[in-house]
Image (cartoon, rainbow, N blue to C red; front, top):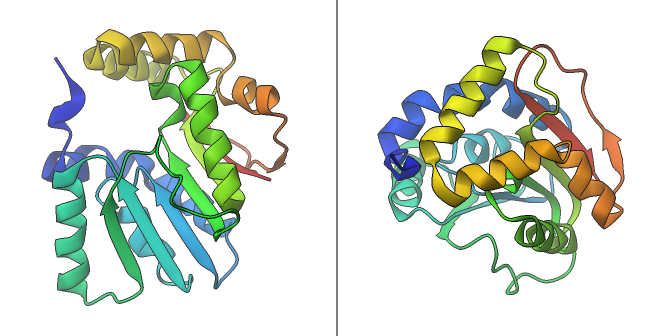
Length: 201
């Protein structure tokens, strides 16, 4: 089975609620005003929340159905300060250095082979002054959460699952930050959930 079925309505019903708590933590890390880019924005749920305080928010995602859905939501809610684009997160060269005050990147790093994940992070840190990363924590403290995460990732199968295993075998997001010599400046205390939220510079 492939997780490409997690587009549009299915993503909104099943995935967005799982990210809600982490999105709330991310919002508290961002001061009002400024320009923000949400990388791998999915249905745009975080983008719309960010738009309440930010001057301008850009959401990008490779999934055209989810971007189209986000644009429909934007039109329905009459939100003026957000833009959505279908874009590959590995190709951010059109953005200039420090173009954004903040970048948020959710559930991306564990999906890629290590070198590509590092290249993506380098570009994200190039285009934004500060970066907020949401991804799987290591270790996942709750046995139930751990089993659920491995089950979901196993469903994705193939290279995605192998990349996830590599991510977990190498101590999660900290491994990538150490490799790139990126500093964590804020990390809220975690409950027994499966996700961590980091503000980095």
